[in-house]
Image: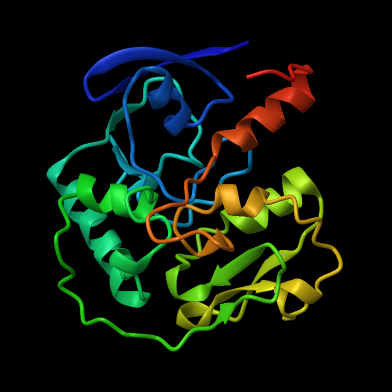
Length: 238
């Protein structure tokens, strides 16, 4: 294993050459906020919350998809980054319909946690109040597109871990939405195994178990990491 030496937040540390900045920082106890990252599945850099400043680069770089390099000097908590992250979270709230008080994951929501972390108490951007659907066609689960932030965790976990590929992203830009099957009601998609991995992977209340009441539902994203470790290392306990 080739070891790289780098500096994050003035802290000298080492990382293996195949690690990302996000992984190296996590190993060093440095927390970088994310929403689209999920341990056990591939990274796509969609939410842009993990952007960091790298000395010598004029562009902010997403920590989840940027490999460590020898001699890197990285800052993760500058005023510029904090301002950018708050703006990104404000836009997520303005572009969707996130009414926390009536959400099944109120108090257990990663979007809510990130909003608190970046100091967001309101959005400076006009709320768009998009007209989005709620799909209750599946016998066990539901999909509330109003709360979806297009992190694509559900798409990746279904494809890479379950191998069913029930989910995908349809359309482009602001019209993009998560689609099941070939734009069918979720309950009509024969490929769905009802495993519930997408439910546990979702960082908001967009995908939920039917019967959950407000603030009742907890996600278990660690289950995905456990399954990956179990398959790769044959360790079936946690």
